[in-house]
Amino acid sequence: MRVLRIYPMANDARFRRRDLALQRRGVEVGLVVPDAYGSDWSVSPVEAELPHWRSRLLNRNSIPLHLWSPRALRRAVREFDPDLVDVHEDPYFPAAGEAVAAAGRRPVVMFAAQNIAKRFPAPVRALRSWVLRRLAGAYPCCLEAGQLLRLWGFRGPMSVIPYGVDDELFRVRPTGDRIGFVGRLIPEKGVLDLADLGPRLLCVGEGPLADELRAAGAEVVAARSTETLARQLERMAVLVAPSRATARSKEQFGRTVVEAMAAGVPVVAYASGALPEVIGDAGVLVREGDRRRLTAAIEEVRADPGDLGERGRARAFALYRWEAVAGQMVELYERCA
Image (cartoon, one colour):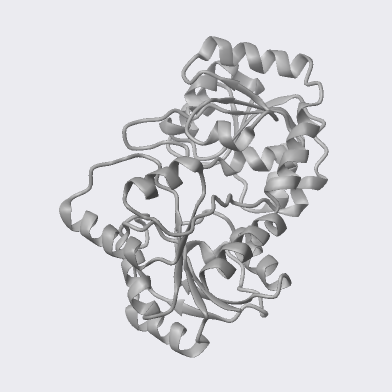
């Protein structure tokens, strides 16, 4: 089977692990890759075994409103001649409509992450309906996103397929005593709920709250490669994910939580968005916004983590390796091609 994958994050080597895993399962994968996109990780050349076509990405700093070059999309479809086109865009994005149009009569499967029932303008709703009618299948990254697709009228085959985690993280053996946070340093991630921890707090990420966290005594470092992330996870006794839902934003998956689980770092999190679904019984969940209970849970886990770290690692190994993700993708492709 030949599958052309169109997705903005194809510049990021972490996400191409899925494509390489698909190839190991016998899928011929071609990529449409943007000239640039907003990943803050180190950009590496696309692997030689992955044929790819470059496209200019207009308005590339906007997640919902970027646009591909229609000419580049048509050229990739014509030259690769796929059996199926896989589009990693939410179905209400203009870029999703572009990709579906470029696919022509070929079957299309599409990613979905939106898990808030927002009210969109009429033209956006019309585009979304047209895209959903055209899809042969869908793979939301969480249950709520899948439920929303059904609410919007999608009736085709659907599989909830998570993001994967790099194999290198399974080799991490944490020995540190720091309370860790990994992710964008923005209010929605709830990181300010940890500011009172002072110098015990290790924040791995970048964002507008970095200076405020440093002023509170926290250590703030950037990690732009898997190797750097692994070194920081080794320093942690617990990873905290205090994400808070807002009217416009809710945790859609929680990749950083899965990375910590793979590394054997015990996880404490607010029960927000998709986090309970992702963590399962392999971490400690606290009612969203209950800062007192969050702090108590952190101290309890630091004092006696029990088998939380290994339970998290086992769950990540079973569900979130790229090999496991690729297996689910192949099953969906075979149903839809």
